[in-house]
Image (cartoon, rainbow, N blue to C red; front, side, top):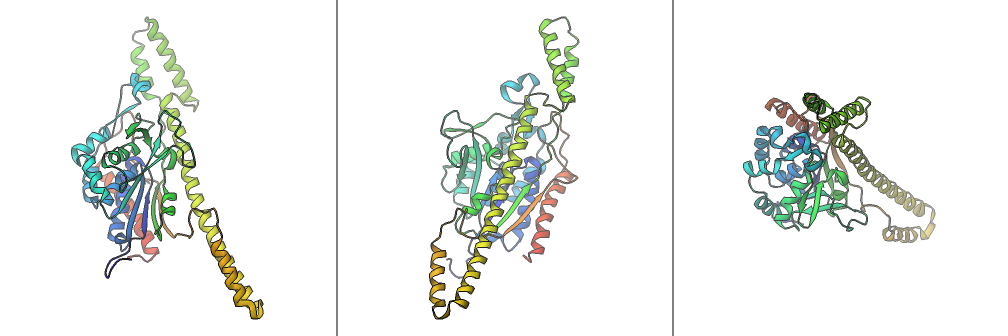
Length: 383
C-alpha cells in the first residue's frame, strides 16, 4: 500500500502486434489512456511486435517522441525490399528499423536501461527459433522479457526481435537465443496480464489485420526482363519457373516462398490470438459461475440448516477457500478492450513498391486509436 496521495498501480495494458498500422493506432490509444484517470494506475505493459515498440515508449512516458518518429517514418526505413534473387538467402526485405530507431531515437541499450527503472514494468514477447531442443513445456518457443529483470543489452535486442516480421526478414539474436516476431507464439499477450498479481483492471488494444496478397507482379517483371535473353539455357529454365509461379498465383495457390510464409503466419497469429481471448473469457466466466455457486450454497445452508446453519456455512466457505481450480488466476479481472482494423486508411508493410506514407494517413490512424478508446472510456464513465 502506498502512502497518502499515492495512487496504487493496479492496471495492466496489453498491446498486440500490427506492423505500422498497429503502432500508429496504439499510439493514439496510449495518448488517450495517458489523458485518463487510469494512467497513474498503470503498473504493467505487455506488448508483442508493434506493441513492444509502442509499449516501450509509453512505459518511458515518451509518446510525443514516438509520434514525431512515426510521422517522419517511411516504408524503406522499416523494411527495405531486397533484390528478388536474394529471397531464399536473406528474406524478402532488409530490416532497416533498428538503424532508423538508432538514428532518430537513439541507442536502445540506454533506453532499455532507463526502462528497467521506470515505474511501469514493460514486458515483451518474442518467438524462439534457436536450433536446439530447449523449446519444451507449456510455453515452448515463447521468450518473455521484463525490463525489470533483463539486462539492458538483452532487452534492447528483444524489443527489435519482437518486431522483426519473419515473413520479411531473418531472425535476430537475443542473448544466446535466436528469435523473431513474437506474433507466432503470442500476438496478444493477454494471459501474462491475467497472471500478474495485483492487476485489477486490464486495458487492451488488439489490432485486427487485413493481410494483403503478395501477388506475382515482381515475378512477372523479372520474367519479362529475362525473356530478352531466351537462348541462354539457365535463363530459359528460370523463365519456366517464373511462369509456373505466376500460374500458381492465378490459381490462388502460394506463388512463392514469401507468399507461403505470409499465409502460415496469418493462420498462426489469428489462431493464437483467438485462443488467448477464449481462455481469458472462459476463465472469467468460470470464476463468476463459481462465485454465484458459492453464494447460492451459503444462502441455502443458512436458510435450511437450522441451528447449525451458520456453522455449516462457515465450514463450506472454508472448503471453497481451500479448493484448487486450474484457472489462470484466482479472480475475474474486468477489461476495457479495444479491437479494430485500420479502417479506410491502411499503410502496408512489406510490399515491393509501397506508396509513401503520408502524414494525413498517419494522423488518421493515430486519431482512430484515440477515438476508439475514448468511446469506451465514456461508456465506462472513466474521465
